Every structure is written in structure tokens, then in C-alpha cells.
Length: 75
Image (cartoon, rainbow, N blue to C red; front, side, top):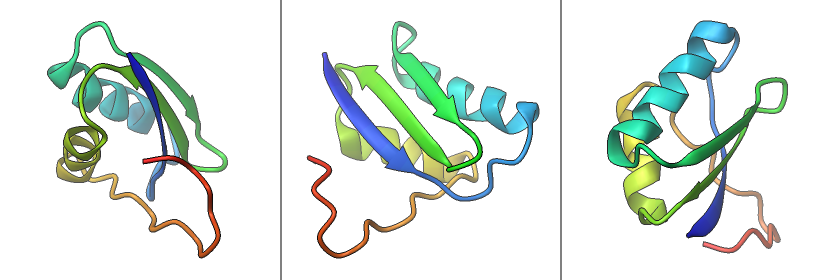
């Protein structure tokens, strides 16, 4: 399993948390999902590719914020 970090737009309530978790778990029921709503940070531990997870988040209405220049978060 790999750990992927995302910063997404639009999370503002508990419903948003649930929608993000559901989007990820549609791809991987066993995924570990941690959400920090105040910063928009989503951490996912899963065997699914980062690209597929990002696409699922985007399709659910929570697009990823592009990383800032110099961000060293591994892809």
C-alpha cells in the first residue's frame, strides 16, 4: 500500500468528508482515508494509483489544488 497526499478544494462540512471517503472507497473499500477539512488535506493509504484516486476526487466535486512550486510531496 502507498500513501498519497492531496489538497482538494471545496470541503466545508461533514457531508463533504463523507463524499470524499465514498469516492475513494468506491475504488478501494479497504483504503484508509484521513481528512483535515480546515486545510483541505486528504491522506489516502491505498494500493490504487494516485492518478485514479485524484480522478475519483475530481469526479466527486473535490478537485485537487495544484502543488506549489517547490512542494516535495511524492507522486
